[in-house]
Length: 98
Image 1 (cartoon, helix red, strand yellow):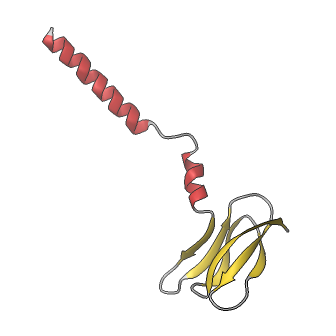
Image 2: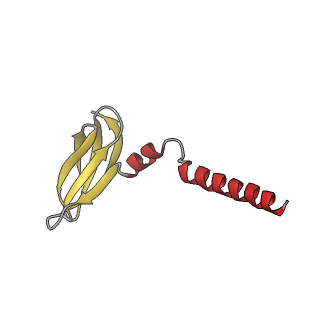
Image 3: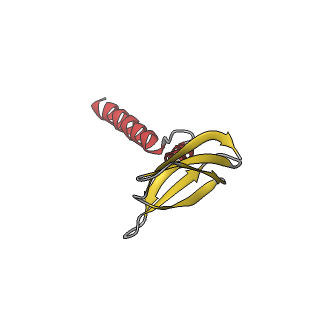
């Protein structure tokens, strides 16, 4: 009796572990992709400023500079090179299409 109970408990524990390892939330790829949308910096030693537009269609973004006035730029879906960071300090969606 004890051996049967241990076997059942062991089997259930293994099944639970296997399920937890294979259970990936639906849309996990979208979450990863969404985390990369918007302004980001990449590169060494010259760090570049980028904007990744993850939506469809062209949109206006506002580029912010360390010195000087902000500028607007029309970007397509995907990554767009904005220039050198830290000269360009940020960029964000301006809620308009172009």
